Length: 317
Image (cartoon, rainbow, N blue to C red):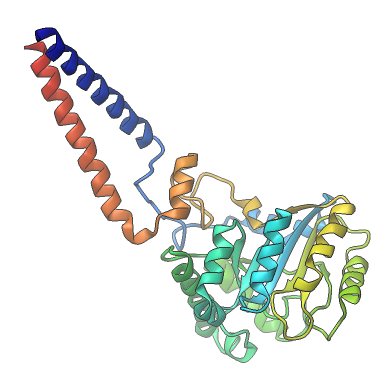
């Protein structure tokens, strides 16, 4: 009888030791610290800004598919279905007011590994360039809507695309001032060097694909401009063929998570831990549960420690 009681105590003690070690091991991954220091406190150094803005100067066969002016209910889900089928990650330059109307679509973009970047709140140049406060509010308001959609408070996309592009001649002087503001806000901007002209006029699928082929000819790294809208031409109708063509030309597909490097919590998914368990929790656990989960974790840890000490003492006595 005494042997059975002793064995039970030893078994219980062993279970507690294993569980205690498990908690200690998980602690190294910081799974419940939830330090989302990834927004206004993060910075982009000049080297990284230059690297992002000059990616099209590279000779590497890399294609960054980018989609502007969404999300929309007609085109974006079709684009996402094709990207998922082709196992391609893209970057979506979203408009704030459309994010507010379609948060579930943006959440899907994020959860499927696509980068959510900023394209302003209204896509209205008169509002965007009215003054510096208006410009900053357009960007901040859009990131707030993105954060609400994907469940990350104080989200900062760090990448902005000017409506109609920085390279367009309209509002040139105001854009130069805007670039300074972007830098102060820890943003950089990205244009494109390849497009299918889907926003210019109504094109057939064949014409859209042909436009893309002409535009990317004799180029290395591509930043491809398309739109996940159906206002003029529908890029989703020719997306699969476009991906197939670029693959046939030796291109690999990346998105702007390529630049999620460095020690600091820089990009929307990169926080204070880097283990696989941590990354799973960052994506799946909503921020409003952070405090509760942290508290439960430490309560269980403390209870285990107390029980371990108690049983160890009983066993010794």
